[in-house]
Image (cartoon, rainbow, N blue to C red; front, side):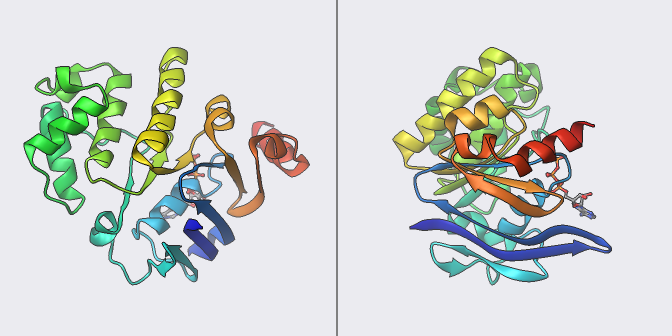
Length: 237
Ligand code: ATP
């Protein structure tokens, strides 16, 4: 069954059609990729699913129920958590404080024990007391994921988690995201420009270009799709 179902969603900003009748589903227990050239509408999809933006048309179903009546501050309690493209950490706060404050800001009170357990799970227990800004960038990105995980979501939206990571860190991230699915039963929707990562870990990939869905399928199908190749070549030209 689809955990998340985006149905014919259209969203306009003035004259810009950021999403144009976009539909796709995310099956429970999968890692699903959402890719497309810059400005294709990927982050806007996250903002619609988390209720920061209201679509002009269409609907978003989570576990079969519309999210459009759920206010943004209740989205975490419905079981959806996200990370952000640019790190959103409080620089002077410790890693632990960041996880606690992050969880609170996302509408869920979390105790220090729970936060420490999450940090332990993601391999950050050793740095719990360190200021977030003192850590290498790759580690800070993991803190950002820990802040989402402490809310115990069923659906995790990851917005460019590989951005700024080196080759080895990207490999580790891929293994880590697969662990989240396999051990925690999490369903993951992954927005990412790092094609190697998306194609390696996603079961299914959706492709947006200029606000429209132009393809979806297995990584192999999408990579061989003419419309996808054209969208990326056009973007580079
Ligand atoms: P990138 O890969 O560069 O992050 P993206 O695929 O995530 O791009 P979006 O950020 O979703 O793309 O943007 C889609 C389109 O909607 C762009 O044309 C963008 O300028 C526009 N857009 C997004 N948010 C707003 C907003 N709040 N106001 C006006 N236009 C917006």
